[in-house]
Image (cartoon, rainbow, N blue to C red; front, side, top):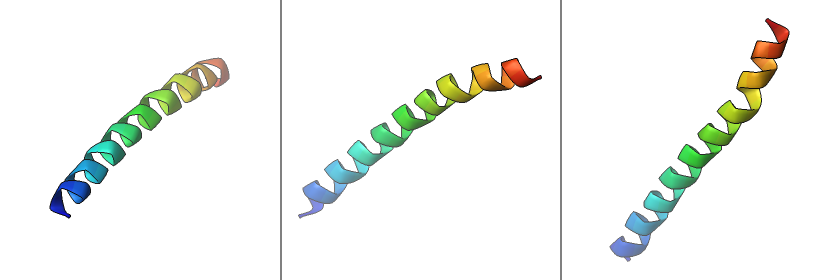
Length: 35
């Protein structure tokens, strides 16, 4: 059971890291275009 929780947290942390990178890749060009 504990292995499941550790694996789930690991996957969620990687997913959030990827989401941040994708979000920056999308939003940075928009901010550069606006300012």
